[in-house]
Image (cartoon, rainbow, N blue to C red; front, side):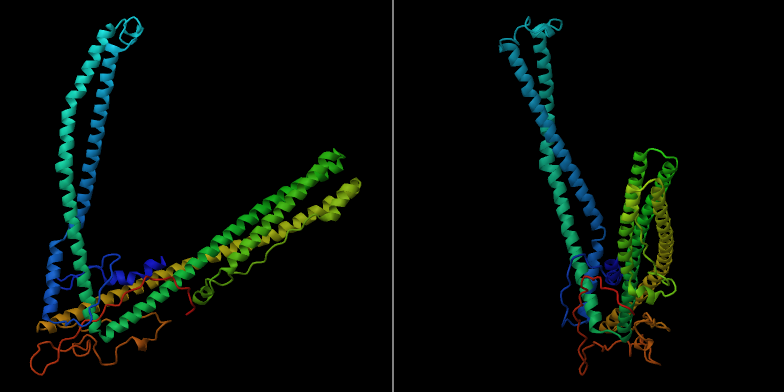
Length: 489
């Protein structure tokens, strides 16, 4: 999620959109690297070449779909050829099989005698078998030429034609990707050579929105991990509560057996079973406590800073302690009489009930922590949606400003009258926590969309006494976005 979000900036800027007529900004093919454009004059020749590439790219429209169809057709024809080869191999194998059976009927010492084969007595004997085998052999021989012709046609005509078509479309698709790469390189290089103050401010705003979004996503991932740990801890505590309830019931059964002067062996077994379940409950509580401590230790510190109300109370839980019957109770029940054993059972029951009370309070507290996590995740999701919308808005502004700069470069290079700029230009809107408004707003009274203020460009008529046209600059590569650890802001 973080990688896809951080990469959305370059993906949006490189998406297909029109800047007039056939001049379409191409998308960069996945995995391709842009080459440098440093020192290339952004003049009329530059834009003519850019438009020629655009016309050529348009002539290759739909080549991707045609290539996919060609690959499917080639695969189908290859499967047909494979199937025909298998049928032909089966046909020839069956011919040899029937020829062998006919030869056995003529020359075999046993299979050539009718009286040695009871199964042939009522079906014409060996002569009848020979006639049937010869008919089958003729059928297979009659089918062989058709299979051979079909195999030859597929091998020499159909499959090579499909392969040739696929190869041609692959070449066209590679050329289209090359054109898109070059046009994007020209487009971004020209803009990098004549950036406007507004574009710089917009890029800064996009960076702040990306940082804010990544921070929220880091917080969201951390809180989700905390919620999963809390639910796992609650499961351990619920398991311990069930064991303590069973231990309490078993202890009551031993007490009743003691009062009624029942079987001593059964009473002793109930006491041992009670102690075993208390030990199991203790281990379950220890596992739950370990899970709970780990989960609470994973709470992102930025959660309380970014969402103080929703995160209030998160991490405030008391870990319970399960009391055991102990050696004294065990000695009372083993060496004491009925009265002493009854007193030992009372002590064990009191410890079980005390442990259940503490465990119940802890389970309630953990449930409250889970509810806090859920409400915090809702608040974080709303913040993520807000930052995604803000990032998309700023990216769209970047796209619009780049289109304006590129069109103005075209107008200046071709000595055309520029299109009137909109009355109200877009304004960069960064996340308030990261950058102050003064860092992104244009100076008072300055219209960044004006040809005099938006870019440091000069006319390119190359008349005597005039300056040369602006030069394209290398398009900065976007490295693979990492997942930085969220920092408080």
